[in-house]
Image (cartoon, rainbow, N blue to C red; front, side):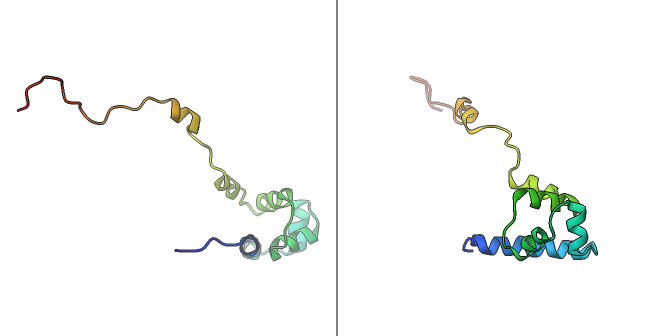
Length: 103
């Protein structure tokens, strides 16, 4: 059983993924900051896992062509839990008839 990662570990992991993605696209930090419209220090902080704003993360992901990652954070719910409570359940078994003869 895997133990849940700490916030620190998750930040480092996301930072490393952004770093690797940036390098695969052959973009340096300064160029990414310019294209994303954010400060160079914001890029450095993101990649080191030292935190940044959500706005900075979104801008970097869009610039790197990975804004679909954001959709995986909160997928659309097809039916709300409250609607599920209102839905009547279909019977799964036949009931024994009263006074009916058994074969």
